[in-house]
Image (cartoon, rainbow over all chains, first blue to last red; front, side, top):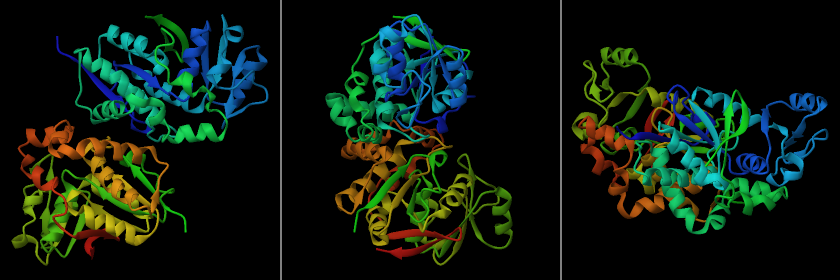
Length: 241
Length: 241
């Protein structure tokens, strides 16, 4: 049997849904959505419903759901808490369904829906999510969420770390320049991940808003074996390593 | 006076025309359009008219123009020659207006038209085009042409080489993750440019079509001081260093 193909997409604006039909896709949004979602499932959340619009989140709140919702770093007044990973404590989320407000995220999930399986990945579940990819034994796409359709460094180096592991397994091949670039940038970054991330625009944005307390957490490897998977636009901790 | 802002765009699908209104833009298509265009002007071409459609190129041919036109590496039957830099010899192009068939190129030129000035850059005119950017003394965008809207390595490392020079001048600042990534990839590549380019998808495509004889030419620095500029969708050797 030939090797599986590995591709990397740097931005929702570059995603080729038709090309990735039948592949497995890992959505990467290191700062902070993927890390928050992994934290929620590590702490026992039952499921997570991403919603695009504030009014949808509010309707869920009125129906009794736990709601995580913020815009530009500010928690919305009706929400239970914001989108920082630290909010998804075991006390709050264990056994619960959480509504998660994310304009970009819902668009990305819609784009990825042609895939045969969709997971959420980041540094926190690096080993688990690369194992999940390998278990699926088919072509794989590392889908960086980016920021407002722009390329970003943190998602790219995280994709590069995943790609390095997958290529070293000997099971994958790639003719994708983005994958080569991601691996090369990861190679430069891995000796000092925190230092490398200093130049990322999102790192500055989080600092400016006082939201950078989660940085250590988001850049730590393998703190969970959960692999959040998306089916019918709902996330569950579908599979553990 | 504050520093000028430097940004890098990895693909036409990522270009933010409104944001770059008033900036100077350098369009980079190393393999092979930018290199062919620089060769044409180095060899004395008077001007170059990019056209999107084959029928347009044919009409120009019927009106007596010199036409460079190929699709997927094959010279179109009515054309004088294809798009390889080697075709633009002094004997053929000196003092002439050349019609250049390029579907992607015309789209990119249209996108960049909100800029205050547009030039074509590559390794061949690296010093000249970075001097041109600095002379314009305003915000600058390095616009990688990519391939069918995809990120590619060769345009990115060329942008990285330009960005390195501009940042070292002390006149520019950047908060653009793409610019940081381009510089980092260039840093990795510059010790062995030919070796690095081996993994680029376009390098394989050119080899498969027997069109890779131009590789040495396209990866050589500063073989011309011409800076092709685009005004009203026509290219001229507007400025020399």
